[in-house]
Length: 299
Image (cartoon, rainbow, N blue to C red; front, side, top):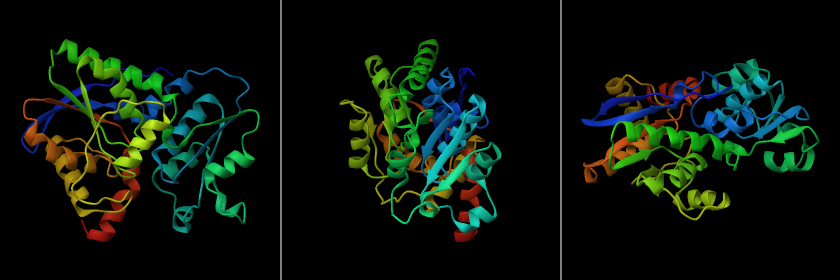
């Protein structure tokens, strides 16, 4: 499978015009930043590989993308998690449901051993056999460079063709891999990359950058209020809903609202800059996030 260029569309949010790079449209199961990060594996030809090994949350976007990748390549995905909640086993939903439908094995480490091993540690101890290919959590690996380089080239081509100057590219960060490699390729052309830490704070995100061997980082914006990953915030839902109503585009409920919260603070002082937002997909996760918001806030 080859990844084609994703389109760029123009929108307005809260009275401010911006451009949107629609990476969410790359593939129904394999879209957004995961498609970019795993592109090198899509093109990999190695007959010795039989099993793809991953780990993370049972509702992680990476679970679905790895399941799709394994299906395309004829590999078996083993995805290790700490535990699978009983209610999710009873009624699969979101990324977990679709990954199972694609043939993934989601394995709860807590049910395999009496120890309290992290899924990563369990894999290191028990599941690095011949024929197994391990993908780090969230795709935080140098293998991401190839696909993100293609994304950077598409952005540079679009900026040149549209004569866009003072361009800033924005996207939220989990591990920060996509933002970091984008910055690496865009900085020489005077394009600033903006990101925000969604999983931990700024120090955690910087440590993730450093683990990938880089020393020059994108601009990291932070929310003025404390934000815990996976926790429900009414303001997040309100931003998500306003984006949907004003742009006609559905965004991810877990990452995008926090990035837009940060951008709402950044935009007033950067009126002369052109904003290009990268839509990284993750919409299947909304299938499980929306009911949580509805139960908690009655929205």
